[in-house]
Image 1 (cartoon, protein in one colour):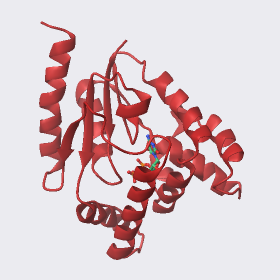
Image 2 (cartoon, rainbow, N blue to C red; image 1 turned 180 degrees about the horizontal axis):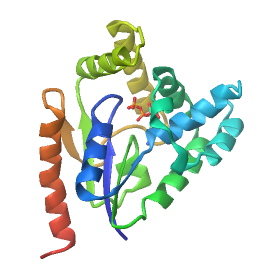
Image 3 (cartoon, rainbow, N blue to C red; image 1 turned 90 degrees about the vertical axis):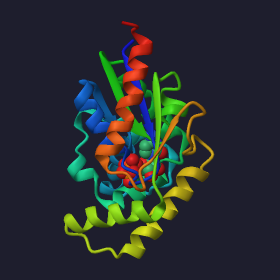
Length: 214
Ligand code: CDP
């Protein structure tokens, strides 16, 4: 088995950017599990199907191809909102978690980021990080991203969305967003991505040394 890094946290906490940087630096495979929920939601939207029919949604989840997840298409703000609706359904989660676990056995190591990686998908991960930031800071970051890609939501709309999504993700019965008991907390409210990466690097190097004593 390779080395597994589990990164969880709420929307726009910086976990995705951090996960990509870690994977690049350590030569690990990276999976943004949010994209699997987004791909499921987009398939339903494209087919004109409802977002709350569990059997239909699970059929789409079964068809998600981890090798064909296109971030540029799936990043749209409305798809994130739709993804958090399909993500409450246990049959959807079962299908996607199974695919994510198959990914997680890759050598020499993997970085998975999402909401339930440390608690459900990879509870035995060698290192768990829980990346967070205040709702105001997260809304500011998302607002900037949306502006760059030509969207025109107001900051207040984005903040409302972030709060609604947090409530849905933390309040659901199946695999709610929460830090695993053994996760290291990283609050990036006042931290640059570089500083967050340096903090993570120290923890990763310690965990690697524990796994393979030199
Ligand atoms: O990028 P952002 O944080 O906005 O969202 P994302 O990570 O792409 O995830 C979109 C939605 O998928 C989240 O709001 C969750 O409801 C759901 N999700 C989940 O339930 N479990 C995961 N492991 C990843 C995402």
